[in-house]
Image 1 (cartoon, one colour):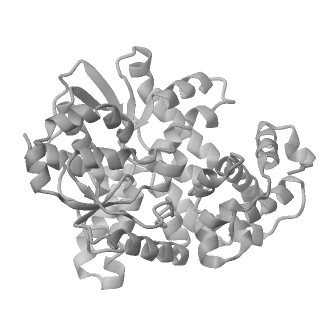
Image 2: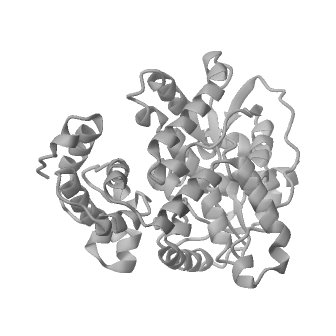
Amino acid sequence: MQTKLADFIKNSPQGQEADAILRSCVHCGFCLATCPTYQILGDELDSPRGRIYLMKQMLEGQPVTQKTQLHLDRCLTCRACETTCPSGVRYGELVDISRDLLEKQVKRDVRSEAMRYMLRKILPNSLIFNVLLKSGQAVRPFLPESLRKTIPEKPKPAKKWPMEKHTRKMLVLDGCVQPALAPNINAATARVLDNLGISLIKEEKSGCCGAVTFHLNAQQESLDYMRRNIDAWWSWVEREEVEAIVVTASGCGVTVKEYGHVLQHDPAYAGKAARISALAKDISEILYVELENIARLMDKQDAKTDKTKLSFHSPCTLQHGMKIRGVVEKILIAAGFDLTVVPNGHLCCGSAGTYSILQPELSQQLLKNKVVALESGKPDQIATANIGCLMHLQGGTATSVKHWIELVDERLTQHE
């Protein structure tokens, strides 16, 4: 693709990166077949190729309007197009750059601006989020069903977190909303790793990974969350006391793995951020290395007679963002689960961070399609790897939805 970027952007680091990405696109259109919004709307401007043309026009200095903003807002940033693209176009990076610029050029209406402001102030702040969630859960039984469905039920308390006793140690990202919505996920992770001779440590000073604010186009605000986490973890990393930084929410995992890239121009944090990203691991990457040990911990005869039929939804951030494919499935099979075939497993469930709130119609259509696919194999349970997907899917099905690490933990507990 030939480009001629405008003077306001062409010599900046953002402009140079955007120019390289644009030039790698060959207009082939392979991305259309895997783009969820194009599949529903049939409008090429709601496909990666169409959005790339819109972004190119903006970067070349042509006028942009709310229509441009609408088509970029409709993008889930699922990055399925990156998996399909034969030219390796880094679409996710391009859309982040373009949204940041667009936000400064096109004014949103008051309602949209207020909604985005509230989301980025409430969701990353665990204290505020917890207060509001508990208030909603307290009045939930008295609300009409339409409103009741929007408030998650109060979760069961987390099971016991094992004592720190092993030589091998890893840190874990607690995150912002996951501890309140599903507190047992990280506790289950700690117990599974404890069985494998690894102690999992929570660093209380860490918090939101920064993804929520970044994808709401408050990117400078997001960098502060990233720097805070780096500062919280750095003493552990500097002393080389931990092997990895474990992330159990794939949406957070893909973000932490990109700290090095996002902060590459920050002289105070570039080196530290790159080190943190190198240490960041999705929990599946840790357990995959320990696959033989997991299988050994299981009583195989019992596992064979107690097969739970399971559908696994692989979040976009896992399979397209981190490019981890088939790994969780192998772990679950080793743990004795019977996995169903999920049609169109590459497509997004419609959660996509705050997308389900800001684009409810498209999100609900994607949710219905995903639930049909997941339930087609008549599973006993549904598993996933991201808290956003988990809550979104549970809102669309009566089948129990859990994080896959909780299911592995339950199996290990059965076979102790």
